[in-house]
Image 1 (cartoon, rainbow, N blue to C red):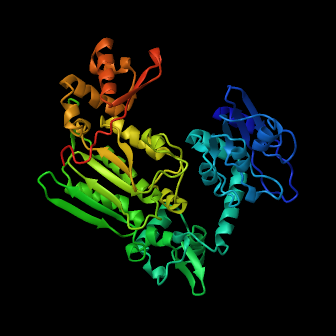
Image 2: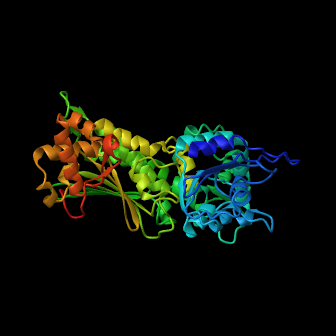
Image 3: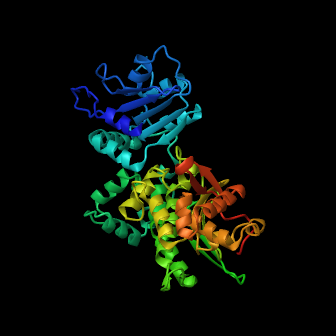
Length: 493
């Protein structure tokens, strides 16, 4: 249905504008409760008509749409963006009692901002198209999106009665509070030719919401202080990351990473390399260290924690806890709307950023992905090393990513009563399933050297114990690992 929405989008009839303002191509697909499928594109029946309006109001004005699902390639507009008495598409979706919506890409137009949150507040479940389809939509609408981003930037410069806390200038600070080393690193990695301190460079930072102009000149914003401040925690208590290594013999190593956030990911990895022994993979004939891919997973997790955390939660800190079996990365806040925890757990979530200023700077410095590839790389690296797949859980107020340090860690962290229920062959099989995430019984049998009957017996045992769930039917049946392999207070520490 998402691919169909894109196909319909390409048929859009974009009306001519005297002012030359770029307009989007939009496609929409409606799947009714009885399975009927209808489509519409922008301008299909009349110049200027939105795809959702055509589909819901023109084609289904007298129809009951309860239980229908809508797919739209662009975030729906809201009433505030429409001239009276026109109704916004988001309000039309709510009025039609549609409870599930898939959106191709968000609309950066400030007049549309907040549509997703509005729809969710009205009980609509919102999903995003996957990154590869988002890319197609964004490419087809490049001029429109660039113009919308420009208008959004202009809107940010307008006085706001309630500006974002991190967008505000930080009192009693100046450009001297920035780390020149961090700023130069950003300038070089982002391939900016303007020299530090030049008017052109400062204007660039102002456009990125890193600086704001006041009567004295440019001053740092909260975003700027977190990214580049020498001591950001002096003004923003939520900045930085707290690190703790809990050694098996009982001693703890602790470190506060409280300098420029753009340096924290590499500083964390350097600290871990210095404090932890080399990790050895003995699953192959030749011993090899698995430090590098494992540390790449941790680095990605730390970046995600810093960039996407909810900085409105005061007093909470990004944290890294290292135990014998785990790297545990805690980031304050639920998954960024409209993402769900299950999407994160599948490591296939589309790119949505809670703090786009932070994300943009980290991406320009090649510290973060902008197209949703980061989660996929975590999954791929874990599978390449034979480690159990990392797990996401939400433990209010923290989103928790657990990265396993050894292939056997998932088994070691199982509750004792479950470990006692599994024989050695099943423990080996559970370890393999945790490294793959999901598998058919035939794949499990081949990997473990079992016959099909024994493989199904193992997998059904995992289902009985709540370690896996079964989906599909007949030859399409999959078994998916669902046990986190961690119970608070249990396992080795």
